[in-house]
Image 1: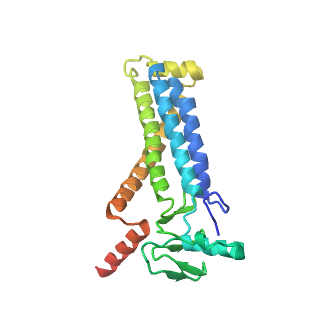
Image 2 (image 1 turned 45 degrees about the vertical axis):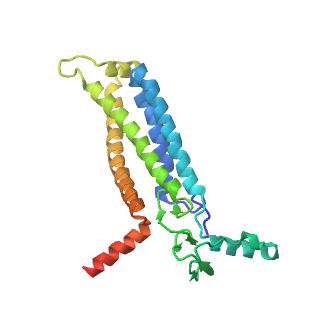
Image 3 (image 1 turned 45 degrees about the horizontal axis):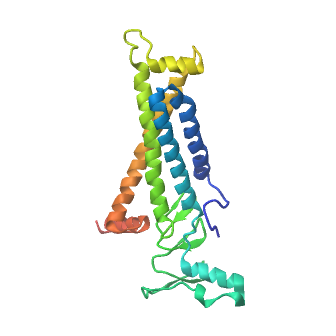
Length: 247
């Protein structure tokens, strides 16, 4: 049983997030911030850094928060502590919910819990298993997950906006053969023969940010709709499949 997303085994999508995030941060501070004007570079760098740290923190909190069903947690504690287990540690059920039995966890769980094959445990109010964070999303960490999506959207948006400005300003003056201020700063920072290479790298990251921002925005709208309807991702999929069968 995996207790959180930072436990092995890791998957390739999770590892890719560990590579992509620092790469985007390093790219901004080496290839974007230095060729902005000083008046723009300082506030943009501060906003970008703060958004990156919030994104990282929220993702970390999502990963380390164990969303296991309370009944499973108590069942495991009983097995571990034996006679030393206290009745006060039992979960309090104020809703008088009818429990269901999970044969994999070998205990009763709440009706909205689902067993995740990746984490090998029942998750309270199961939403989905996030491959990018390699952890289950449930009642206990859904808010952190949603905040991760929002902060990631803002983080990438900040990068995309700065890159858009840099690219546009770089090409201003090309038509009449003039050197733009952005191009001159790129020459001063990287050397006389490097501006085009720098802008080629920036154009690649701009395209990456554009695709990423579109996908994250789609995910954000999806979860906003789920929150509005009071559904989990799993419940939405079940409802959608039932509608298709009835058609």
